Length: 331
Image (tube, rainbow, N blue to C red; front, top):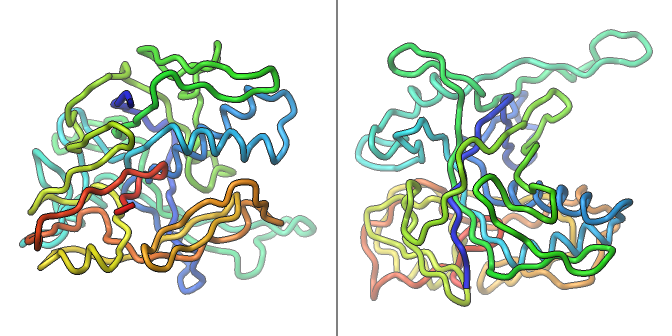
């Protein structure tokens, strides 16, 4: 069984969530949301460095695998206390928001910023040749529709298996869920988190700003779900996707029409993974090691993007499993 937790974080600095690496532009674009994979990565780092005094690569892999098997993260979206600004493709094009909808340009004006940066030549102290580029980011403060300055928040959900324990150098340690965090002994795994890219510039600092809410319903992020052996997300016609959905032949056969986008997604590889070409999924082979963990890029896979709306299903829509990284998959 699983316990669902609704989490709200406040940005303490700008946040950059990058796309696939690209040399075709001098602008490093940011996503307008936070994928679940970012939460899995930072919780793995924090838990490993608490549980092991001097962690090595195997410790990170083992704890990461335990969190991967026992946590499920949704995507996280900007939240102003009333409206959750997730994307939706409709008759008006791309809009953001549930209770109040705003256009994509208005969303970017309110929540997205950018700055120009350059690398420095250590010998001369001058700008390094051809290193000038622009970084997009989610602002940590914004001006609302009434002209007031507000701190940016993001909201999402996390499912945790009941009676979960993590490995440490002294044996198994129990996970405890409290109002102010997820604890391993006295360590709050949700405290002092840094996510996303450009952390050398001080980006990505977030803090838990509301009490954790245990809930069995959709919550403020509208995700209908069933949680038994696995966490299943129930899809509905004419409702936007709130994460990437991996595309396979079965889904393509059942979808009659949709409004939205198809995207290639990837990420950095930390343990060796294999591609299941038929299901278009990525499966971990336990124990396999990479020569350069974190430096290799996973093979991209085709996905329906967040905000995509399915209008008609043929023979109903199959159950989709929520994965550790927030993506949805048939298997």
